[in-house]
Length: 206
Ligand code: MLT
Image (cartoon, rainbow, N blue to C red):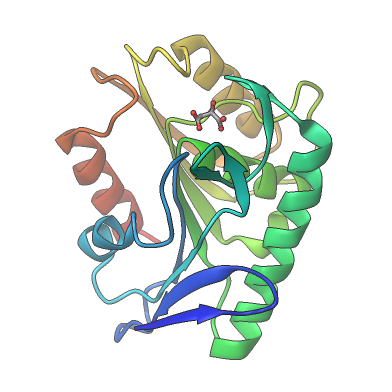
């Protein structure tokens, strides 16, 4: 495992032994860092390479991947710029480590920037698992996402991302041609055991 500071993102890259598995791009939630999702990544995709950047935006002491104006109200100009920056980082990391396109595994703020990557730079990802995500743009772009596998796991009691918002996100991806699996779980914003099982099963098919 290497913890590297590059010109781009502080990140961890953990090479995997199973080259049949696509690498995972791990994107943490608000207040997390590049180490947060490593145990989850190892558990749900054993043997996969893990690429885990640290969000560059600070909200107080909490790290995030893009700025927000209030909870659930995003600074879309900042989100757009940071999505491209993250996409460039992933492309550079792929070249550096000889990796195929990764599957994003994002939680909360990390899931929201992963959704934004799918909308703005879809070629960068082989697919995405979005845990507790909401629509990142009020007027989203319409890329062709034909055949792109997307797993959406939302919480029916999530006070931060209402169930209706995850339905809008899921419907939007379906309309763009993605292969969407959306499960609404009896959960809040935090992850529960069912998230892990569903993630494992979905990733095993990639
Ligand atoms: C966001 O800002 O991305 C969402 O409100 C989730 C969060 O990080 O709290």
